[in-house]
Length: 257
Image 1 (cartoon, helix red, strand yellow):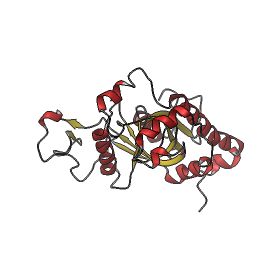
Image 2 (cartoon, one colour):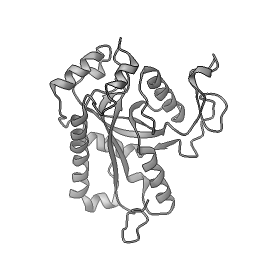
Image 3 (cartoon, helix red, strand yellow):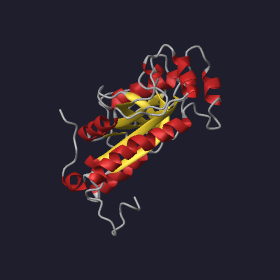
């Protein structure tokens, strides 16, 4: 916000790439992979009751703000619960980076082998399009993963597919939205990139607590590989924008049909 409001700069044609690492859904991604987000969903803005007091008919203790039951319709995201990015720009970024080689290693190959029931999780690192769940709580486990998928579908009208966790992205999008309302930035020029440092749940047959405990010191299965992937994938897009600035300044790129 401070940068965006600084009168010394003109951000009206600027592109923004918000990049970071996060936990991935093994149904969709593998360790070290990269996800260009089409939606950013806030996982914190909600009511919550303790799991031990959830009514038998409820699937979760999380309830949307201004609603009385989980997933009550219609969904209302008017207070920053979700953000929809420029799909054509995200698709362009994906088309530009989808064939980039991403770092792999014996360590992450061994880690992903524990997820034998998940074909996508067994793949070497790759680039894809998906959705991002942003929250300040570092949640973990297959039950929470089910919630993240359902929460994403709820706020995207069934169109979204949760793939990766985040912490800062909803805050970044809120700031950029305020700046857009003030005429300082163009929200159609925003990209969000998340790379997979760990899976968001326990391996099949494993314990959730043990899986979480293995990461409490930042011991993520693909920490360095995910950092490198964020750099390699993001750098490709940044360089293209800079190299073609006379065109990119005037026209927002889109994937070719």
